[in-house]
Image (cartoon, rainbow, N blue to C red):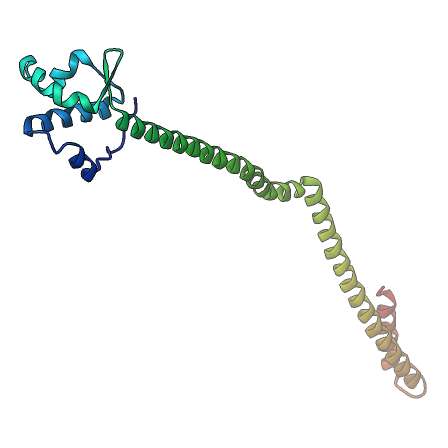
Length: 204
C-alpha cells in the first residue's frame, strides 16, 4: 500500500471529545489512531493492548474509556471518523493518478505528432542533395563548357574580324602606294612593293 499523506488532526475537536481522558488514556488513544491511519484499516481486538503499549491488566482499565471512540465489527475496532478521512484521501490519490496518466498520454501523443514534422524538416536537405544527382551535375558542366566555348568563339571571331580589318586596310594602303609608284617611283620601290603584296596575299 502506498504511504498515506499527513493525518489530519483537528485539535479543537479532539480536545472536545477527549476532555475526560487521563494522560495514560490520551497516550493509548493517540497510538491507536496513529496505527489505524498508518495501516489504513481497522485494528484487530487481539492487538489493541500491544499497539497501545500497555499490559493486559492496564489495557483492561483503559479499554473501558476508549471503546466509546470505536465500533467493534468482526473482532476489529473501527473508527468512523478515520474511515471517512481515509476514503477522502484514497479518492484524491485516485484522481491524481488518473490525471497523471492522462497528462503522460497527452505528452506522448504530442511527441508523436511532432515526429513527422521533424522528419519532414530533416528530409529537406536530403531532397536537395538528391536533386544534385550526377545527371544534373553533368548537365551543369556541359552548360558551363558550352558557355565557355561560346565566349571563346565570340572572342576569336572578334579577333579574326579585327585582324582581317587591319589586313584589308594594309592591302589598301599598299595598293595606293603601288599605284603611286607606277606613276613615277623608282623601280626598286616597285619591286619591294610587289614582294610585300605577294607576302600579304599569302596571309589567310
